[in-house]
Amino acid sequence: MRALTYAPGKPGTLDVEEVPDPRPAAGELLVRGLAVGVCGTDKELVAGEYGWPPPGRERMVIGHESLGRVLEAPEGSAFSPGDLVVGVVRRPDPVPCGACGRGEFDMCRNGRYTERGIKELDGYASERWTLKAAYTVRLDPALESVGMLVEPASVVAKAWEQIERIGSRAWFEPRSVLVTGAGPVGLLAALMGRQRGLEVHVLDRAPEGLKSSLVAELGATYHSAGSLEGFARARPDLIMECTGAGSIVLEAMTATAAAGIVCLCGLSPGGRAFQVDAGMVNRDIVLENDVVVGSVNANLRHFRAAATALARADPKWLRRLVTRRLPLEHALAAFEPADDIKAVIDLTT
Ligand SMILES: [Zn+2]
Image 1 (cartoon, rainbow, N blue to C red):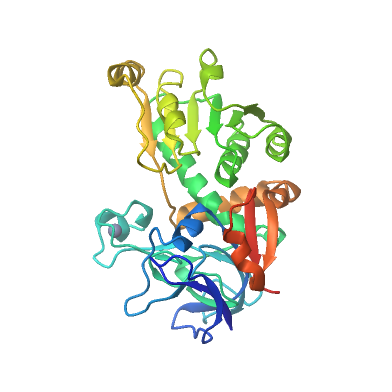
Image 2: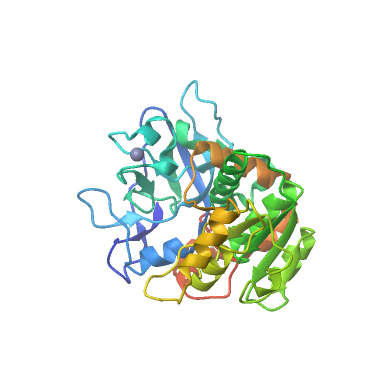
């Protein structure tokens, strides 16, 4: 079968190659790969910035935003041939730490977790893959063309769960959320904000266009801007920071209403310094009982929440997030810089 593979740590090694068909072990499903989404992490992996191959190997299959259809399911599993499924990305560390031992491997404490397509486990960008039933999530059949959005949506579902758990420390009835960044994560954060009945604002540098129209279709408000200055008066209860841009992150930390929660979901490059009045940042956070929290990755519960959220969304809206679909033979083009919201590799052509 064909697979999209790379040698972690070695830029320029991404290629489509013939690899042996996978054989399911006990408790594993055999799945026909339908598609994988490509995100910023994949581009960093291909650029050699990080990534770890399985022990004893140089190359591995890339891809963690999976979508497939079950070909074979083990006796007694909850799955049947024909089911539309996605695979969870992370696996618990072998120790395991206290978090992993309780299924909260997204919060792993020792960093020895593994991840499909990223860290020591083959990813999902192949024509067939195997998957433990325990890390499989079944999707609504209506998500056939957009199910690869479940993984980015799982990261967002976890961030919302974090916000709600933190909020429950006291009286908590948020009215408004500001989402910074209108990439796939920001747009899915806005979708889930609307599903919670919140007044949603989305801020992005892009001028009016596809992003602003996607935001408007959710019943949210789009702000084409590169700073949070416009929110100095109407301070949002919550901020989901999805740009990772250092200046926006710093602004966000003091931009909420009292008892506000800022959830940082974006990753910043290092090496850019800003002048900050640390005392004023501290005063704002302490005097308002604010919380700033980082959130990354997702466990099985978050994947299930994401699958439910996408099944409730307008499928036409979700399809518009996928701005490019490439056949496997042209997969390398999905990793070039482009003006995509989400590029997807079709594994069936
Ligand atoms: Zn762990």
